[in-house]
Length: 424
Image (tube, rainbow, N blue to C red):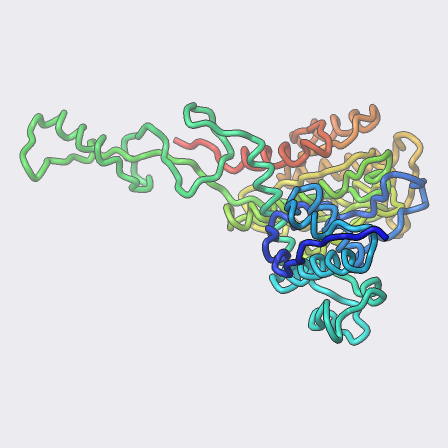
């Protein structure tokens, strides 16, 4: 009989794992949008609902630990086995401990327990949620978990822009202070008295030629520093959740959700005067609370761009901001339209002239209301390119050809560039 020697299992191994790094590794799993690898996904046949059970969570945690290298050689040696009860119990204890930490730290919450108190019951030991029950108990992200994922996404995106210690180009890098411009201007009535003391004293000394104290200051000696003019901005992020966003072997909706979370974190921490709202458009359109963004999914829908623009315009016009903008992320041409009687007209075969005309009419209404539309295209279909070109011409916005890897960089760079403008 073959014998096995096991290293003593340390129950504190779960405490040694970097929980925030683990949560970052789990981001795609926690924000899954109904993508099942692109297999068997035909029009009208949506993928299966994402598995939100504790069993699925533990499997994802194990994969993340192995891929990120957070399992030390000692852990791997202790957990290594051939399916025997000892190794399986050690692995279960490690995974249960990590899930418990995610719950205790407030990143996740449980629901669906038979007693309605899944979050209060222990995961191990007497009275715990057993193996069978773990398939029925569902988990979900908390507000703290969503905020953390938004923060991590923002850090990843800003880090990819790069920065240097020498140079004069404007950058979107965040800092703890605000540096004024290098030059000053003579004070004029109405200017903020952000006095440039050295330049003011130099003018006085040059005029009088005297170092006597008190220094003789004249009105014309006053110099004030120029700085960046910052305005408030209302943003509506329009996310296409039609079925094409998970077709063709690629999940395009999850990266779009990550961008929304990153923008939300950026606006709340760096631009508290700004607002951001999220609108999903498909056969119709609706605004969703940011708290439900993580659980939003695509479906067997068409693309009703006009209805999304109409709702976004209504939300923006209700806000008194200096700037109003729509950020639209899509991968398909308009193929649906809401008729006056409330019925949804659909035509996915090519560019429907009636649908395009009504959509462009709504684009013109946004332009008339002073709303800029910037479109981020996740596909390069010729019909889509032509439509977006016309949208940009009418709204005087911009169009970006991007992919899931560079989407966040384009969106954040565009947002940050519009946050400041030079005034004299």
